[in-house]
Length: 150
Image (cartoon, rainbow, N blue to C red; front, side, top):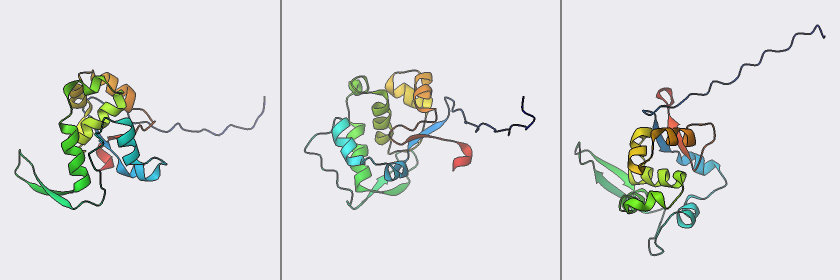
């Protein structure tokens, strides 16, 4: 046996999301990755060919139906939100879980949603959402939002 002490390495603390943890699409993840958001949208998701996704569209005023608050979003976000909010109910069963969650978040204007709410929209259990998206690997920029991340 050697008499030299081994250095103590502490494992990084991985925060565990719960059913109440909010998830969102991190557009910075897309910027840092070697993936292109538009290519992903056209190739992996069920987008009509006649839908034009122009990133440099003008701002659009959106009115929150609950609060009456008016906020501006870019046209690209508005087109995505409108398109994905009109998808048929069975869309989630015809695509992967990650793609389905991505669509739910886009339909919700990428406003953070709790795992339980995403699960309800997809008719899945929150546990499935958490096991898929709650780990250290980030899929399509979908990340949990923790209290001290804001």
